[in-house]
Image (cartoon, rainbow, N blue to C red; front, side, top):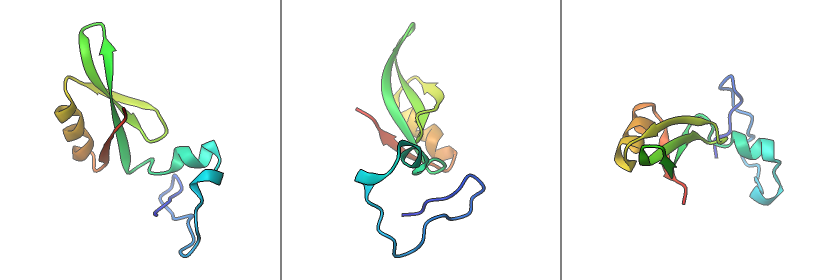
Length: 84
């Protein structure tokens, strides 16, 4: 797993085991922050859409469909993941 500080430096020591059950909410929010974005279906005043959120839950954008949301994420060098 590649965990980085906000300045891009690694703060993960190779060989260290990270127990996902014992990390703080702040540590969880930082996992994949600059590498993963989440897509989830939402209802807007204009009807159904797909919201794009950073790994920490920060809203980033809304797309008309899931394919456009995923394409926007990939264009920004991130990996799309779907939230159910």
